[in-house]
Image (tube, rainbow over all chains, first blue to last red; front, top):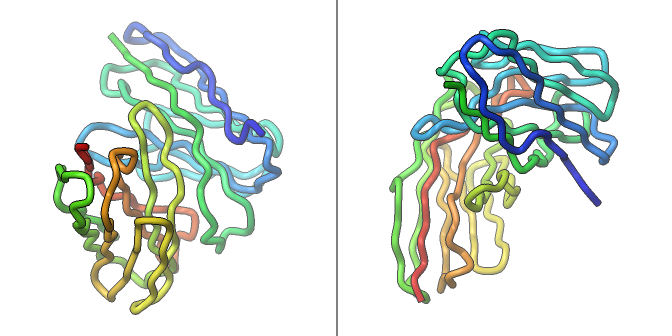
Amino acid sequence: NAGVTQTPKFQVLKTGQSMTLQCAQDMNHNSMYWYRQDPGMGLRLIYYSASEGTTDKGEVPNGYNVSRLNKREFSLRLESAAPSQTSVYFCASRSGTAANTGELFFGEGSRLTVL
Amino acid sequence: EDQVTQSPEALRLQEGESSSLNCSYTVSGLRGLFWYRQDPGKGPEFLFTLYSAGEEKEKERLKATLTKKESFLHITAPKPEDSATYLCAVQANTGFQKLVFGTGTRLLVSP
C-alpha cells in the first residue's frame, strides 16, 4: 500500500527555472494538499484541493500554481524558481468532506534547492 | 489569526525519564487539535486528534490531553525509538481545510 507518493525526492534548480512536483495518492481521498516546511517556520499550506476539480490558495501561494489532474493526482508547479523557494515540500491527502477532521496522510517529501 | 506555539523547542531525556511536551494555541473556534510525529527525512505521521477540553487519548507510551488553551503530549518511560520531532496543529471551525502547525519539539531519548 503506497499511500502518498511524491516525485522527485530531490531537485536542484537555478533561479528562474521551472519545475513541477508530482503527487499521487491511492487511498481514494477527496482532499489533497501541498505544504512547505522550513526551519523555524513549521509546515505552511501552499494550496489545497477539497475535491476533484477544485483548488484553493493556502497561506503562502505566491510563486506557485497547482493542478488537480484527477482524484489521485495533485501537482505543484514553480514557474520561475527563486532562492526563497528552497524548502522541503510535502504533499498530503485525507478523506471526507470539507468539514472533515480526519488524519492527514503525508508523502515523504521533495527536497528542493534553488541556487 | 490562528496560532500554535510548541515548547520546548528541543528536549533530551534519558530512557525511562518521563516528561511532557506543550502546545499552546489560539484559534477562532477549535474544530480539532492534532498531534503528529515526524522522523528525520520523512513526512509527518498522525498520532491523535482531540476535539474538546478535557479529552484524553493514549497510544503506547504517549498520552495527549487538551484544555481550552493548550495541549500536552505526555511521554511515559520513553525509549530511544520515541526520538522524533512532535508536531501540533489546530483546525478552526472556519477554513476547514487549513491546519495551522507549530514548529515542533525535537525529542531525543538516550539509552
